[in-house]
Length: 108
Length: 108
DNA sequence: ATTTTATTCAACCGCCTGGTTGAATATACG
DNA sequence: CGTATATTCAACCAGGCGGTTGAATAAAAT
Image 1 (tube, rainbow over the protein chains, first blue to last red):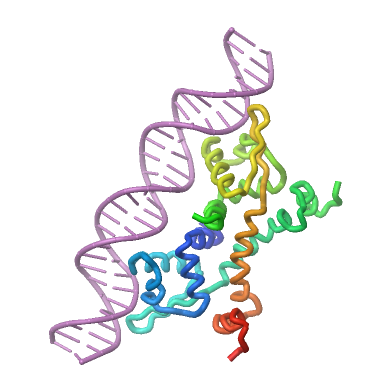
Image 2 (cartoon, rainbow over the protein chains, first blue to last red):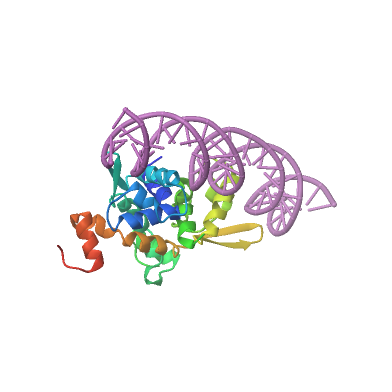
């Protein structure tokens, strides 16, 4: 499974997006991250593992505490993928026009 | 479940992204879409239903044939979501700087 | 009218996911 | 030392996902 798939699967879960949102405001320990959620610490720990697997967070262990830091770079993949389709909603282009624009041809 | 979640789940599967890629080049019937894939027609039909549920395709039934057309607009949601995080990989900003930029404060 | 074609529906299956609880591990604190 | 804290590991479970096959439906073709 490629990296884009990993990243998309990771961010497709609302709780994981919420975790990323939290982390985008600064690093935090696992317990801190889990605190506002209505689920067990273990569940959050699992979500963090998924995010880590997608490269969206980085973990620094200091003593018994794990400091989790957001790593936005993999989202570049998502941005790149979706960018290909921007022509389909920008400028009210219809599908066919977008197609020809894509191919670099003149409009029919 | 909100719409962004629907869209992200839909595009997180490689086969569905491949289907979207195909459809971005022009509409097609279900059988045509399924042809290049190494899976049953039924499986493709299910994938199309997921994409339809996310609003990423539109279906026009003409006789017994279903013409499937790509609808890029829901990808706007993805673009918008990921846009929030662009600062984390653009301009080599580190996390903290990005944080302060986000808040509109001066750098420390 | 019969047959072929396009598509979905329904049931089934194996596997993964997202959650739980309880134990294990490792570090910090008294 | 013994105990409390931070985190993960392991086992379990319900439910959904992605796939299959076979039947149903509807339209076209002969």
